[in-house]
Length: 585
Image (cartoon, rainbow, N blue to C red; front, top):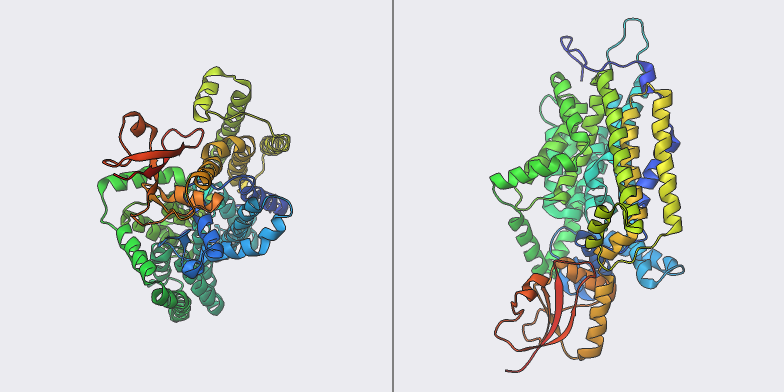
């Protein structure tokens, strides 16, 4: 797409600003990002343990469990089966290997998280290569300097791609979500692949069309229409009139035909063999939609700035700085991939982080293209903000850890004790060593910035990505035992299983009452506990609250019951479980 002469590019750079970022640094940062927090913990509610339970059900339950997601014997009629299929395959292949070094249950947990490496690699690779291709196009090139010295096209594209990758790593909202055994890492990865495919169609339409079809099919099989529709609409808008892709519109037929064909390979058998599941799948979709409500919009625009920090200010700046180039691919494509998920959010009944996640990739790409338009003072401000913000966050994590183990400062120690009631603090020497090494690496990075004052434009994004990865590393090393104690259902599930084995007969069924999906999934994942929907069951598992028990609210009004077991997570203050037997009247 040729640039009209009356438009001047806002990018102004010299060659030193695009100095090559060491590939080893990028590789190490990515590995620390994805491995930290992925292992050495239990699955936590809700999406994390529900995803794991569907994978385990696919392997362990009879009938349609391997074809349609379910939690034990309960149909989980939402999203799609791809995350379940992938996780079940990895569990089947790798859990025997992990079982050589740990318990069979923990081997299953470890194997179920291997697909996260696949999704993370697909996301980061797609973001980098898509941004690299966009950065090498003529539209975003910096203004030629009067006496030369501007960067080469290749160096400029590489610098923009590195910045986009660092910014997606620095996005706060997806940090935890990328480590879940849920649909979120997969849907973000398929969106990134769709974005890359659209960019690839500019010069290689055939290969781009095929990978786009695979990405759209993957998005549908991962999260149904809720995940696939905003991506598909963004793709269609990328081919709008005056777009650089308009001449390649005919290739979309291949993409959508391939996507629909793959989706039907699952959908048609599912509809035939699991009509009950499919009916509730449609019900989930329809109940997920609603007209925009003022309170909902306020919640969205309150939460998104935190979720998309630190990319959203720079993404908005990029749109403004490049406003004369709005239909150019480097702005138009990521803008459409950000706009349609945002519009979709407004028409969802209960949007939250899984839906917010579709905005992380396009915002990171847009933010990368804002960097060459910034003045030197603004870039330096980004550097110093990252240094101060993440140094403070790392110091806060260390201070809390000292308070947990040493009881000082007293006020902080008392607050932590209330949140971790019953936890016996202990120090893991390997985890402490890793935390110290991560802290020293952050200090070295800050020292490098202060001592060498690099001219490379990616220095601020290096500090942001390095800072948030350091903070995350400290959290999952210093605080993982305490977090596991607070959030894991392992102990309460074991207590419930023991009570059932001792006091519930083999011919007695157990029905749940007010039992949440995350709790049901946790009991299945840890101990294989399943519950019956039959109202004739005389044994009932009730989820209630300590407040309700203190106020004397009967869990089964009008019925005489015998308490078999009562329990909760040790530090839990909002939920309680009762196992009751209904007595004859």
